[in-house]
Image (cartoon, rainbow, N blue to C red; front, side, top):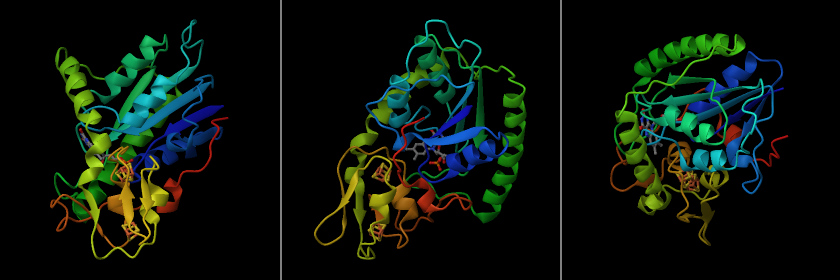
Length: 268
Ligand SMILES: Cc1cc2nc3c(=O)[nH]c(=O)nc-3n(C[C@H](O)[C@H](O)[C@H](O)COP(=O)(O)O)c2cc1C
Ligand code: SF4
Ligand code: SF4
């Protein structure tokens, strides 16, 4: 059995995870957002992949929590192959070393790790790549996915790139930055274009959005800052500070919003 755990806000990582799954007949996709957050995670399958986006040159809070629930192994991997795949807008920083270090603390060896560059979804910082740039990125990403799939099939071992002491510094900086994301939703608001459809609430992987009596979104300050609400809103009604009114929205064109809904997943 091959388990593929994934977390994705705007579809890039789900796209990559799905492409992987197509190449492994026994692979099953598990949404990390849909797992029971009180339950242990046993990396007991013959193969396990952990797919996630880089946040602030590190790992999203939900991935940190997921890794915290992984059951330590006294006898190491015991022949099981464990790999991680990180998508990013171009600079994943210390994300893959952080996965490797966290698993190592539990006696688990991260056998291989891969980075797949995708369009950046963080539009408070800058506009996403234009259509032509996106098309070029997807061609390169598909190539990188094919190479990574072959490496996993051959159980080829790779280590994430580390540049000491920069990765130690990145770990420190990114952990501090990611810790601020939880309450950064105070900068979201829905403008007059909101029609109360509720898609943002259904999509949120952190169950962080409810609709008030006027059917307008309310954010509850346990945000992953995944950008799903802002990027998928069909009315482009969600704004972040005064930074996004004129910015183009981005979500992966090969993934639909409904594929990101949380569904109960017991991880079996
Ligand atoms: C809060 C946040 C922080 C991010 N930080 C980085 C980063 O440090 N480096 C980078 O290259 N991309 C960064 N990105 C871009 C995403 O990693 C990239 O677009 C990823 O493919 C999104 O995956 P998804 O569509 O599966 O959510 C960030 C995105 C978000 C939302
Ligand atoms: S997805 Fe957009 S239009 Fe729909 S409720 Fe949320 S903010 Fe309003
Ligand atoms: S509130 Fe928006 S940005 Fe925050 S976790 Fe939910 S969907 Fe993502």
